[in-house]
Length: 481
Image 1 (cartoon, helix red, strand yellow):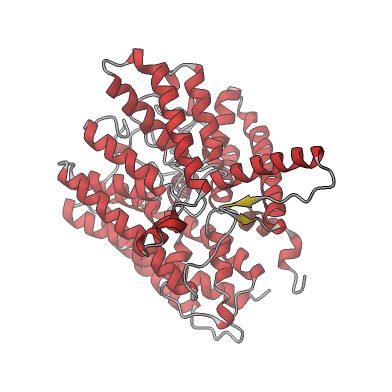
Image 2 (cartoon, one colour):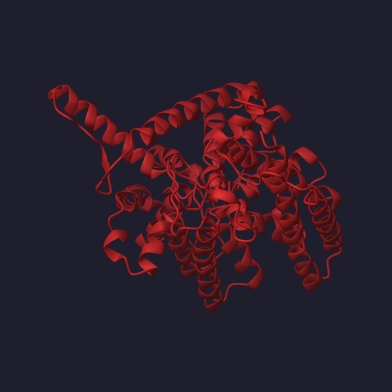
């Protein structure tokens, strides 16, 4: 284990977080809030600590796969542990565990909250809370890869593999650093476009920034107690469109912008993703339309919630916990499916669902034609057996963590619906669940043990399980192995 290179990466994480903590100070100045002083001091301390950690000379700067996964797991832990401190020092979330839950939910773009009244918080802390979504959406280490010098052998791809969501990670361009720059250009461009459209709609500039951060990162923290219910119909449609857009594989946008239109529209995953949204939205709208005055309202509510849940954003315009069982069941299913690989969304990912269906079809064909040679294709290409093995390992780990998490938090004696959807909401980085953790409720009532389990679930879900699980594997920390 190359501890020196891990320490260097953590130093960059601290410095980056320190710099980002200075942004809420601008909001504090704009609104005349004293909480900005806390963020200023903590930001400067993080920058200084990161700089001090980076002074040690590294003999071998290469990042191998083990160092890559460990670095990503530890980076997100350090990012969260330090990012929670401002909430405690400002007194807005006095309990450190609750503050940690809130900021982990922010960085992992989950949107689950322990707060009953978000409108009582300062604009400074609300900004930091929502901005954490934007930081975590594309990944803090992807952001850092744009700035740090390339390591020998191009081994920074091991950092991107460990942090980027989806069953496979490929580089757009030969250098990983340039890939990171391309990703963030697309991410920033879409963010600015949404800000411009919401500004045109007349949305308050502070709400505009926070809602856009939450939408871009598919996070879900709002600045109003009713989430997005108070916004105009046009603004809700805009948020719906961009939630769905940020749930699309960013490779599509790269290919589209480089005029590779044929390759862009060959993504089976994106076609399946849009089809699921269309069918789910129309099905729910059909069932709930008697609850609304017009069909437009029913369609808006249905597609907003389908887009919000499937992309794992977590905004809401209605209390969907009051909807009929069929509609709630559809939403719970969408929680598990999630968005596309290579997007800012969470969940199992549509590509994995497509591969599972294709694997079942292949097995059935094999039974009918035992001597035939069968293979699975995705986007016209044969899927490597290693990817399929990784898929099966991921799904097995996913359901084991899911079951164990429900078992542990059931000690708090909430209903099965509450516990099941609480784990589904955190492990899939959704935000709200049903019953006691529904869109009009929060996670504050859970015990400290349950909150720790759900914090782990949020981190594990955002990092595709393995970077967190590897931290608990004893052989990880051996000198050789």
